[in-house]
Length: 124
Image (cartoon, rainbow, N blue to C red; front, side):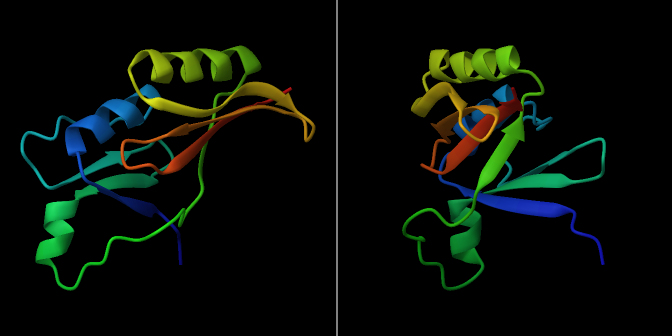
């Protein structure tokens, strides 16, 4: 058994693609599709599914609250700061500005277009 896939429900696929590309996710252009995938060098895939697609598949209830933690390693503290800045400059919302966390990371949080918290970190 091998874990290789994470799917995120998106109410705005175009905005989600713009957001996750800023984190280095190699998403193709959506071109009107309701499902797209970014495949990483290690074989892992991150998928975006439109809310419209999931509503067609059966009973769909919008979840309430944070359901999953997503974190992206920036590698170096300066890269965490730059990535956070690029996301904010692109019009997305920050939660926690980069700081030197007591657990030994440069750490920040942002919200994706659907309000999911996404961590950006790097070892200090």
